Length: 67
Image (tube, rainbow, N blue to C red; front, side):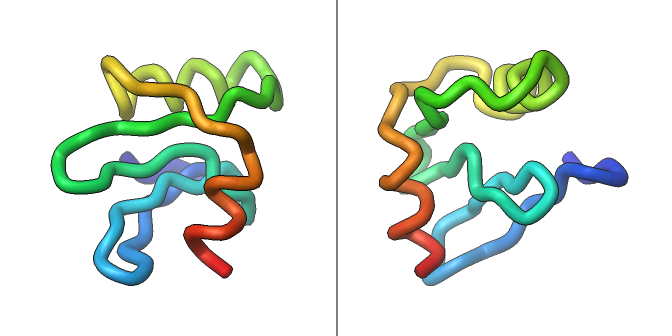
């Protein structure tokens, strides 16, 4: 999924979904994870469309993935 404010990148072999410049979800070995932080209605909508079923992780998890 790529829109004006959402895009995907491969970081260290992991597919990461960004909202603006913030990593908010990822797919690791076919398993989806999404942030437990509420950013906005639109971010939540896009994350849920991208992940379908996902395990929540703290936002710090996603910052560390792309650090």
